[in-house]
Image 1 (cartoon, chains in turn green, brown):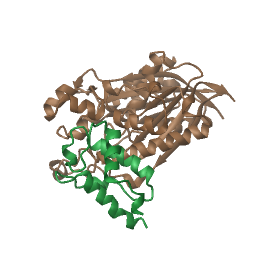
Image 2 (tube, rainbow over the protein chains, first blue to last red):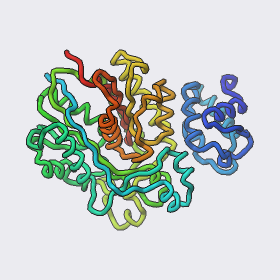
Image 3 (cartoon, rainbow over the protein chains, first blue to last red):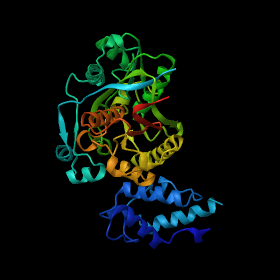
Image 4 (cartoon, each protein chain N blue to C red):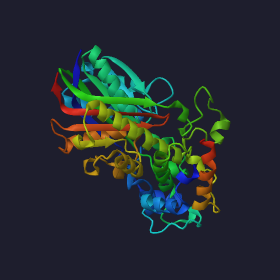
Length: 86
Length: 328
């Protein structure tokens, strides 16, 4: 199932598209990305939910977001959700 | 059985303007941050003596004047609000007496979907009792948010909008859809002041009488449910997004509106918005935008006008109007 998930680099490209950011560093803290805010993350998540309806990703992906949370962290959380989706 | 026409409309907004520059200074953020976050440059805020009912009365009176009617002609009054004049009785009681309404009066609290819910309710009433109906959406959310709550303070504005429906053999509603998901009741709430948590000194000290929002949940569900209701209504009407002439969504946040347009395929050039000037006026946002579009000569007979809203609860709904109606 994990093969169906986008790579972390693909997630970055998706987030760039919805936010208009010039670049999204997958290892930078999400809170420090100057052109990405929480509504951009929700817009990205809405698109993800539509594209991968079998993966139970929701806003809790970002629930405990802090300065250590990167896009790579989020990607790992998505990977962790895949077995639960059956 | 009767259809209706919209024979009058009116709005009322406070004179007091709160700009995003002033608000940003108070909250310790820049104007640019506020505008980029929600698209709101300024909002109207009630002054001492102005209330949900006083705004509703003024908007209602203007709608009656435009229709050439008086309160004595109105068989039913519906006031949509989530910021009532007081807990009891309903806000419609205050509007009823001030406007000399002859008939019934009740409130609808579907939060920001209130006007759409009220319009559909009124259409049903009109079928059973073909006499004039006054619908008013009025809210004063500036009084319900903690002034230090950045997430909500930047959004809310106060105002009222009203329409008068009169019986007609023609059909104005081409299609409609209403929905709700009560499991989402935690996304935006005021927890104190009701039967679950009566007001006490402690609830006030804890600020539980203020509205609280989970902005992420609201964004996701607002987009999801509004996209769904719009698609269902257009499908029911057997029209496409290209057939819609004017889109009047709940004026919540330009980011949400743009997302809805993007995910439905509705043309941004057909969007009616005044969010930049009034902010989110909740139940009033759709009737205010509709009234301004009409006064601006933007809507003509034969046009398809799509109203779409969502609100806390969560609730959502949409109505496709064919302006001028079609003979049935």
